[in-house]
Image 1 (tube, one colour):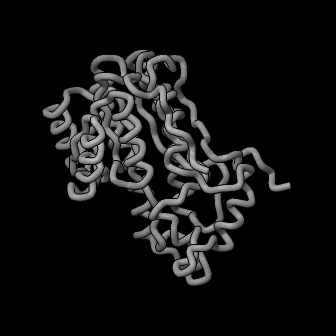
Image 2 (cartoon, one colour):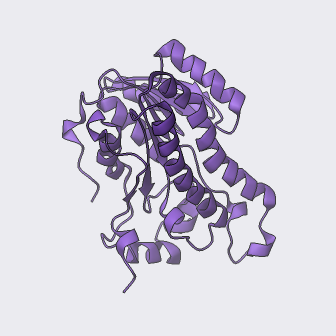
Amino acid sequence: MSAAPVESARGRLAGAVAVVTGGSGGLGASLAETLAEAGARVAVLSRHLETAQPVADRIRAGGGDARAVACDVTDAAALEWARQRVHELYGPVDILVNGAGGNDPGATTGDERSFFDLDPAALEHVIRLNLLGTVQSCQAFGRDMAERGSGVIINISSMAAERPLTRVVGYAAAKAAVNNFTRWLAVHLAQSYGPGIRVNALAPGFFLTEQNRYLMLEPISGELTPRGASVVGHTPMGRLGAAADLASTLLWLADPASGFVTGAVVPVDGGFSAFSGV
């Protein structure tokens, strides 16, 4: 059963300017839609305009305000261009959600690839996308927040950050670094630019995405793989997460009423991180 819609969301973020990187992905699109439903004006960032545009169109069709912006978060020059484009569309950024990320089969161990045979280029790609992409996005869009002493940054972490998972060595290491960076940046921005800037992270449990589908589901039958069955078996709620499960926590972290919450990494995992397995 998926989560119920957040009925009280509309208007909570009225007028705020939000940027969602990785906004064309399954989770990223849902995060963008949630912010728009709460009244934010949303820039949906994706590496390719043609993948971001349908998300922005869907938001506008539902009565929200969204624009698609092409941007590769691993490219600092592209991020600066995107920042200027968002300024043209909406003005300075109030909320940044760093949803860009993902894994690479070449950075994943398995029967066909041992740890000793991992592709260094694939490992570097995963670390650049998940860690450097987050850091550089915070540099680009956090500048607006530093200049006025207010704003919200929400990074997207993972269960793999706190409890290293088998196989996904590059992804787990990168997301662990995102957790550390989240806490570091929360302290730095509050101390250097004022307590009105907050930095937190969402740590989703196991949500079915295009990046992990090959690990979770059998390609032909669609049944859970042994790994997928193990994940569900170690999730007390007994299911994989749905994108809507992140909505209320995202709004809580973005809401000005959460003004004393910073440096937190919040699990949304169906109890996975609380379960010892016995």
